[in-house]
Image 1 (cartoon, chains in turn green, brown):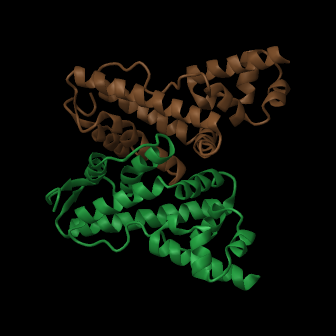
Image 2: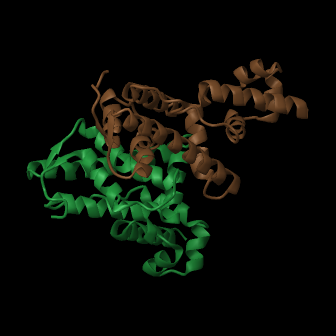
Length: 184
Length: 184
């Protein structure tokens, strides 16, 4: 029982790390852990609980390992984040995190870790862009995650709808002035 | 019983309209409705439920009745919104709305109404700024609420902490280019 539980969690973490939250489904986790789907359901009746547990120790794959030129790289990663936030499972985890953080200390910790990790990774990408002479950053870099990810959170949570390429461009503009060509 | 319920809801709506969500406490609603606090608790054991019910029919007081010069007016209103979002009760309603909207149609409707209302009111302020020659708007105006309110939502829900004046300035900059002096 405990062994299958560990195997399932490990599989969920792998999928989360490799492909992001949307990959953590009962079907795929069971296949990866080489257990039956019923076993996964027995431990975690709802996939969002499994995802929440798997998230506990895993860095989110957003804005990881930036490469130059940073602008197109960041554009792609913002698009991936926007697409992921629109998926029902990811939305479930997000709302579970923000709602649970109000009353459950363990979820508050997870929420804080997620915000810290994603913020650090985004800022590392912006720092690389500055070092590469691509970006003249505007204002306090600690506000960059709120300015660049907040609008995607708003679209996902309050105002569901598509995220246009123009909106992604405006998120990039919130970081500062880019010296690189828009479609480099 | 029904009469006191109606009186309490009416009082909650008045307070919501006049002062915003944070004013909708058991104490103040009871005083305004001229009923005992215990009566309010009997109908609505938790103040966020009362607030959610009161919110159903009431336009939120954010970005209402813009005045020129729009920039300082908008700066103040963004600050009010940031402060309100940091309050426990308002945060409770916000997370209740975003979490409940996933599964409860009534809350989905409330969430959509809130987003529509606040978006329309913010865009009306930006339109006034354009007409007054204060603002050259950037991009699609439908994205303005996500760009200007999203970062405050991110700060409230994912990354609790103060909202600096510099961040408010950057929210304003997301709307476009302002021709008015920063501290007009």
